[in-house]
Length: 388
Image 1 (cartoon, rainbow, N blue to C red):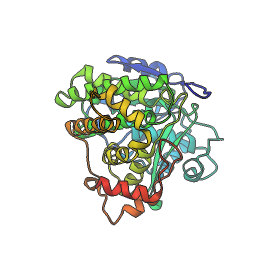
Image 2: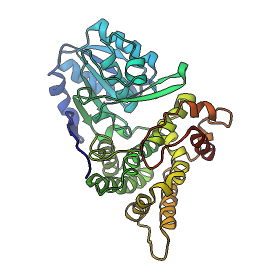
Image 3: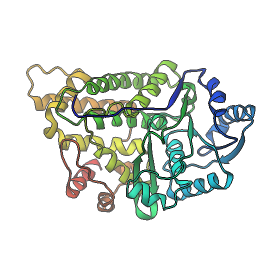
Image 4: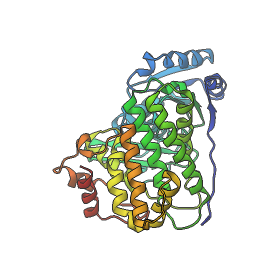
């Protein structure tokens, strides 16, 4: 391990088929008014909305409805939600849905009483809140982002062609999260596998960095092996509780700040993927899958030792008689085969990327000084072209 770090995670997690039994106790700890955030209405069709409302009514809460959170929540929607919180003096924001709804709720929580433009303060300038923060709770229905146990909030500004994530301090983390794997059964398969790759990408972004011997890299390898195994089962049998519960738990640990302890990360796949999303509104996990292989093949020689380890430990590649480069390449071939097996997008052209909009996407890509190689704009353009 390297460096000095502080670790804190204040989120209370309730996991399993009986997790909802803890919701009433949690919401009773907050004030009278709860704003219920959700997406396009699927929770009303599958019964989760009624389940949550029964709990809130039993707890005597006044409920403010805030539906219509889109898959890539916009700054306009965030401002609308912040106004609802102020106008109704909301005491708790309860996000019921997937990562986009949770990201949105956290963005609203720090924006409601912000005396500046939240887009500029939090997402452009990456500042921390100096205003009162409205508490957030979560009932998760789709897994992938890990937003249920971290401070991340990704917001899209279509007018500026930008999709930016801000990782807030732990005082913005959800106060509690309900994790019932059965709630994920009704998610369409394409959304499920997009979430699976989002999980994988979160782990790889933190894994492919650093030259030391990190405890967290060993944890990351175990999480990746578990995810690969369970995803194969879930694709064949989407209602397999054991597989879906393992995927849900892996998603939480992939991005709850544990894996970054003592080391840096990369995050360029996410920077390029988010830029694609800002211009195409494509599903987040699919933007990551479309650019991952071109990106990792481009940087493989810069972090060859780690790609060799990835091949041997995660994919069981036999190194006998092979050069390090061959072993590393076999690992990426194994990653590619798994991606095709589970059914994620392999090409950015499927998502709306064209030769014509590549320069604009590159201009929207944040170039981070991290990982094994610091990209230039021209290199981003090359990776995007390879992803087509």
